[in-house]
Amino acid sequence: MENNAAIKLGVVFSGGIAKGAYEVGFMSALSRHRRFSVAAISAASIGALNGYALSSGKLIEAETLWKSVDIKSVTGMYRQLLKRHRIYEFVDKIFSEDDKLENPLYIVCLPASSVQPQYILLNDLSAVDKEKFLKASISVPVVMEPVLINGTKYFD
Image (cartoon, rainbow, N blue to C red; front, side, top):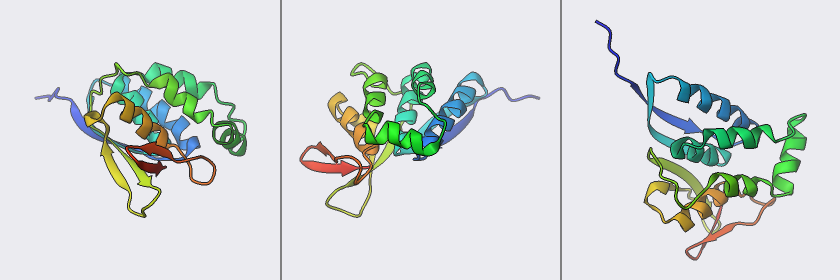
């Protein structure tokens, strides 16, 4: 007897811009296979943006953004996205105040005044704070400024 129930997955997206581009391909493949369902997402750094795209149903938008990046070299990709802060444009293009997250989405950020990372459930936040935490999750220390959220500065 065949079991047609979807297999529930917990999906983890890591940091690293090159990995972020790869993760979009994984997300697209996952979405095409109805045998799997995503029960929860945990993400760090650029993976937070990809996790958000998956949970909010914006895979096509994420794929389009990643395909717009010149990936001839990893150094060039970092320079293009981080030093020019183009990575924040990714958040602006993926995020919308009207988005509904279909899965629990946990991201990690580091308060500038602490060495203890904070794990944030985005689903429970206001739209303004969701956007700020997404930007904080990709704010690389030294290269970018921290993001101020409710009186606390956060980094990737």
